[in-house]
Every structure is written in C-alpha cells, then in structure tokens.
Image (cartoon, rainbow over all chains, first blue to last red; front, side):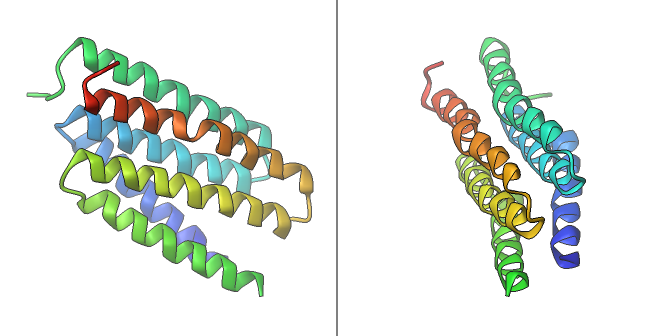
Amino acid sequence: MDILLIILTVILIVAAVMTIRKKDLVAAVISSSVVSLIASIYFYLLQAPDVALTEAAIGVGLSTIIFMITIRRTRRMEE
Amino acid sequence: MIYVFFGVIALALVLAGIRFVIGPTTSDRVVALDTMTTISTALLVLLGLFFKRYIYIDVALIYGVLGFVGVLTVARYLEGGL
C-alpha cells in the first residue's frame, strides 16, 4: 500500500512540473489531465468518493475539452 | 493476496508514467494518458474491494464512462477536426 502511495505522489509531482514547463500547450493540457486523474485517486483514498466523482467528471473530461477548443482557436506553441 | 494486486497495478502505472514523461510526440502522451485512465479504473475497483464499501465502485463506473472523452477530443484535434 505504501509503495502505491509513493508512486502516485511521484507521478503527480512530475506531471505538475511538466504542466508548468512544457512549451507545447497540448502536452501541457495532457499533463494537467494526469494531475487531475491522480488527484481524483487521492480524494478516493481519503474516503471522499463524491469529490473524486466530481473531479473525474470535470477535471479529466470537461476542462480538457474547453482547453483544446481554446488551443484550436489560438496558437499551439508558446513562445 | 490483495497486496500482490496493488503491486502489479503500481508497476503498470510506473510503466505508463515513463512513457508519458519521455514520449517524444504528443500521440505517445495521449495513449499513455488513456492507459493510465484504464489502470486507474481497475485501481478504484480494487480499492473499493479493499475498503469493503461496494458503493465506491460507482466512482469507477463514472471513470469508465467519462474517461475517454478527453482523449477523444485531443485525438480529434490532432487529426485536424474539432
């Protein structure tokens, strides 16, 4: 159980750093989706399944769609 | 016995995470995200079994229904539609 928590934390931190540092905005949006996924598992582990449900529906699904439509209307690369 | 399952799922998450970090193209990262969503669904079902609270499996159902929508949107963008 502890090794699972360590691995989840490492993936969460790496994905959060990639969200900030990436110049390709599509990769940054995918990294943000991974952060939301792992955070949802953490909410689930902390005995809050309703928060995990909302985080999964909004963070993984809805925000990715809105960000991709926005990138489509503007530029993909950040200078 | 259930700790063996946790170890297998942790190993699968590590492998998908490595491909997600070092993936050269965007398509590799999208496929890694989809793989991690599927592995997380299995992890949520296993945790519901571990906590002995079967109402928690509904969260895994929502994951299974809504998990692929973001991947579908990114794939549609890479194809040129959207």
